[in-house]
Length: 479
Image (tube, rainbow, N blue to C red; front, side, top):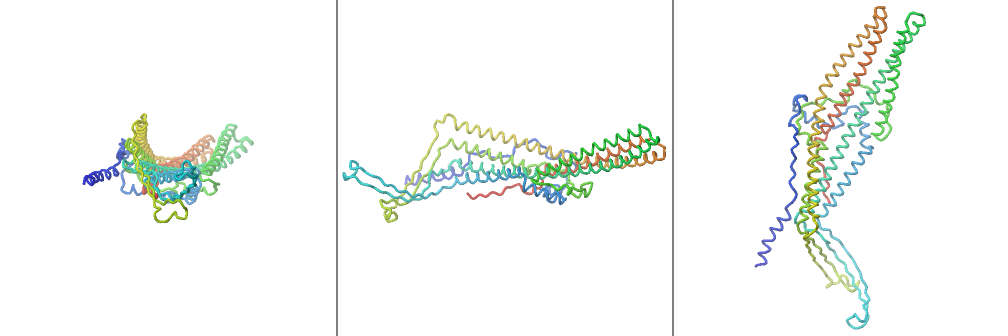
C-alpha cells in the first residue's frame, strides 16, 4: 500500500515536470513606433492591406523586367547562399528535434577468449565463446525539465528566422533588379535625348559656321554654338558609359548576359510597369515584413535558449536499456532460454561547476537582450522606410507634374526664340539660352520620372512586397 501511495504521488509530479518549461514567454517588445503613419502619407484606405500584398509578378507589369527577375531568382549567388542557409537551419532543427525521441539501435557482437589453467574452474586451459544480438536504447534523456525540448524549439525558431532572412534577400533582389532596370531605361532615355540634342546643335553649328565663313555671323556666335555642341558631346559620352555600366550591373544581378535591346520605353511615365500604391497603411503591418519576422523568431530562439540554460541547473536523467539474446554458441543464439535484458537509468546533478552553468545562463540572457534591441531597431527602421516612401510619393508626383509643365514652357520659349532669331529680332545668344534651358528641363524630367518609379519599388519592398499574405514558414517536423 505504501508503495502504491508513493507512485500515486510521484506520477502527477513527473507528468507536471515533463510538461513544464523554464523558458520565458515571448512578448513583442514595445518599439515606440506610432500606430499610424504621418499625415504626409495621406488618408487611410480600406483596400491598402490588399494592395500591400501584391505579388511581384502582378506589381511589375513589363514582360522584359519579369523575365530578368525570374532569371535573378534562379541564378543570383546571394540568393543561393540564403537558400542554402535555410536548408542548413532546417537540418539542424531536425537534428535537435530527434533528441526528443529515443533512438533504437541494433547490435551484434561475438567474443572468443582463451582462459589459462590457473584461472579456469576445472584447472585446465580452455577457450570460451560468447555471441550476442540485441536491440537497445542508449543514454536517452528523460526531458523532465525541458532542456532538450527548449533546444529543439530554439533550433526551430532559428530555422524560421533563417527562412525569413531568405525571403528578405529575395525581396531585396527583386527590388535591386527593378531599380537597375529603371536606371537603365532612364539612362537610355537621357542618351536618346542627348543624341537628338547633339544632332540639332550640330546642324545649328554648321549653319553658323557657314555664316561666319561668309562674314554674316560673328566669332561670338560661333563660339557660343560650339560651347553647346561640345557640352552635348560630353554628355553623350557620359550616358553611353552609364548605359554600359547599367547593363553590367544587371548582368551580375541576373547571373548572365542581358539583352539591352529589351530596355525600351513603351510608356514614358512608366505606368505600364508599376501600378500606384495607396497610402495610409497602418503601422502594425510592419510586423509582417520578412526582416521584422526574422527578428521576432530570433527573439523566440533566444528565450528558448534561456529555458535550456535554466534546465542545466537541474538533474539530468538518462535511460539505457536493451533486450536480446546471449549464447556461447552461434548456432544456439536464438534458442529458448537465451533471452537477456538490461535497464540502466542514471541521474546527474551538477554540484560544483566553477560557475559554468551560471555563465551559460548569463550568455543566454544577454543574447535575449540583444534580440530585443535588434527587434526594436528593425521595426523602427521599417517604419522610417515606409513613412519616407509614402511622404516622397506625393511630393514626387507633384514634382513630376511641375517638371512636365516646365518642359512644355521651355519648349515654347525655345520655339519662339528660334523664330525671332530667324526673323532677325533676337540674337543667337537668346536661342542658345532657350535651348540649354529646354535640354536641362528635359533631363530633369527623365530624372524625376526615375525617382518616382524607384520610390514605388522601394516602397513596395519596404511594405514587405507580397510577403504580407504569408509570413508563416512551413516546417517539416519529421525527425
